[in-house]
Image 1 (spheres, protein in one colour):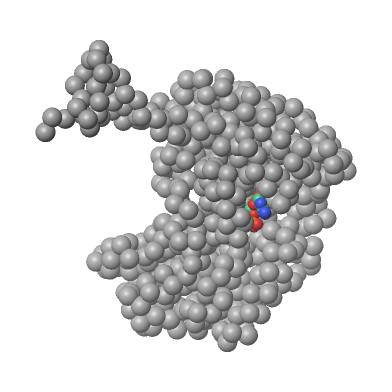
Image 2 (cartoon, helix red, strand yellow):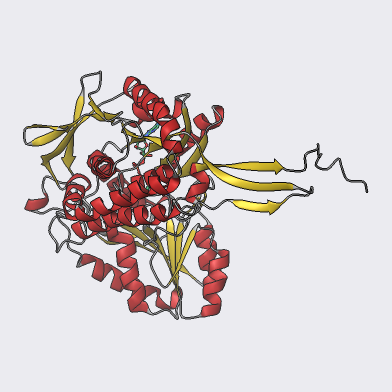
Amino acid sequence: MPTTRRSAATFSNFIDGNWVPASSGKTSENRNPADTRETVGIFQCSGAAEVNLAVEAAHAAFRNWSRVPAPLRAEIVMKAASILEQKKEAFALDMTREMGKVIKESRGDVQEAIDTGYYFAGEGRRMFGLTTPSELPNKFAMCTRQPVGVIGMICPWNFPMAIPSWKLFPALVAGNTCVIKPAADTPLSVFNLVSALTRAGVPAGVVNIVTGRGAEVGTALMEHPLVCAISFTGSSEVGRIIGESCARNFKRCSLELGGKNPMIVLDDANLDLALEGALWGAFGTTGQRCTATSRIILQKGIYKRFTTDLAHRAKLLRVGNGIDEKVDVGPVINKQQMENVLSYVEIGKSEGARLALGGNRFERPDCAHGFFIEPTVFCDVDPKMRIAQEEIFGPVVSCIPCDSLEHGIEIANDVKYGLSSALYTRDVNRAFAAIRDLDAGITYINAPTIGAEVHLPFGGVKQTGNGHREGGVGALDFYTEWKAVYVDYSDHLQRAQIDRTE
Ligand code: NAD
């Protein structure tokens, strides 16, 4: 069990049902980004040795777990989801303390894990395969889903419980065993999630947690020969490293990466609705969502009014410690991220964009020990500027004028990412044209770029990923291998293709 030191619990790695400290003897303190004087927990700085133990435990557990009937595996996942429901408030508070997202969003993050658990528990009694006719007489053909083996999971910090649940729940229902590496900034939520699974009855070795830095734990995990697949969510830069390593070692690999998500608002849109959507899409989770609205592409007829209103309304957003129910915008995750976001503000100014709001560290006495940034609005942004092309991952939005829907879509598509997208219009014809033409894995009509539901596929095109999807039934395609089965009941040799006489 975790032990307590200086009022913060110390967590060891969770390997084969045991608490295993890092052999390096090193730990790191996880601090609250809203107030760094608070230590949320103390976690192991692990390395290849702990990864090896965890992978071997998962490998040893695989045979028995994969033979538990899928409906029974799913019942455990169902029970874990129900435990999360009971613990929702406590786990949400932990999440706000470790990640900084405002409490109502932390509740939503836990709820997403609950929804994912219930959804994939249902798959335990489906996981449909296929039957299909054979071309030969007295021969039966079918395809079944088989588990893949040991899955390595490498997680980001921005959805501390939801994203790990997208990986763990389908993987477990499908019969795989797992080694999960939480992001260094948000390990506690993964421990909370796995505690629900353990209480629900997941056997020792089936789910293992190893904490530490990406370069050490992540690398050891992706290179381990007993790991059959890596599910990674994070930046495109790290995704490229992981993709290359997995390709070299013939591992299957799911990459869910960055975004630079556009919202197009046409002259005919319901502007009040679009404004609400823009505020939520750009500044929800302090802009630290892979699906955050980071470009607002506005048709010229409404450009001036919309940008003026946006800056005015964004100024009214309440910034502060997300534990306060009234706060809209919490801190960014850490000092490095704060400096990175502020450096993009300087880049935007030097590129000639007009800073309509914010752009500074947020100063108030109760925020002095956290990483707060003013909600920031750039106007008159050229689509080629770096602030319009690169993922900033903070409370910074760029407003770009456009002439028409076609022009808006051209701007929207002219980035290396393709995760989410949105269009505000009252014209159904233009809505369907945009659904067809926006290069993105997700398109919203009259809603912002954020707000995915767990039973639909989640992922993107271009440098946002490598073609896999989390969420929805498609997730099973990553966590299972198709097996084709032929049963010949003819009692003589039959040769496909060869036995044809004409
Ligand atoms: P990151 O790439 O810095 O880190 C992600 C994970 O990879 C962490 O656990 C980290 O420790 C690990 N890692 C870092 N270097 C590694 C290496 N060399 N080898 C192996 N593992 C390594 O990303 P982040 O800062 O945690 O998350 C933010 C990024 O994630 C953003 O780009 C965001 O868009 C993206 N994201 C994408 C999705 C999606 O589904 N498309 C969802 C959430 C976040």
